[in-house]
Image 1 (tube, rainbow, N blue to C red):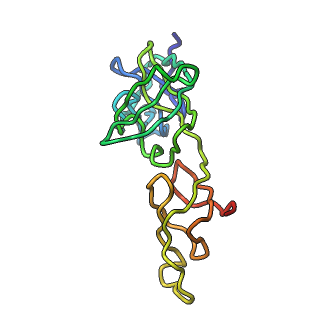
Image 2 (cartoon, helix red, strand yellow):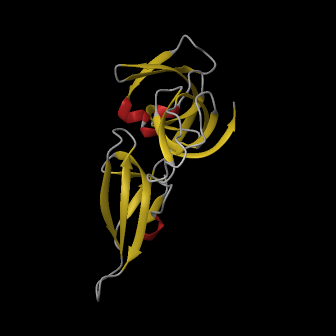
Length: 190
């Protein structure tokens, strides 16, 4: 178990703070006038999904969390429950809350294999794929000359998620999406 100095608490690191595992979303070391440096961070609680802000001072040391991973397969979701199973043993099913899955979950197709993070053998959040290729199931027609909204329209994807896409995307197209930002990247095919 490694201890990190206040300035070593940087983005994408996992730490233990107040007995809970956190992922560091952002960090910024700065000095206010004549005072000592401070590391202002945004931390995501890996158990609850809540994001909090915390400032680490020069004298602070924080424990680096030992996070393990396992591969799991997404099955389906219903009424706020997301069901997964172990990728090697489909009979070992378990459910998690929507908060644990996060916003990227709306882009998951059934039978997608993802990494689940474990802290002291306790299941936490997931590492989702950064990109996903999904089929457009509903798309309003793009009207020629309709560029007042920046040439965008809202479509529904096969997972039920809605995103904004360019006017040339039609129903039945397969598009690539950035799951972290929820933005359209490109049209892949039909």
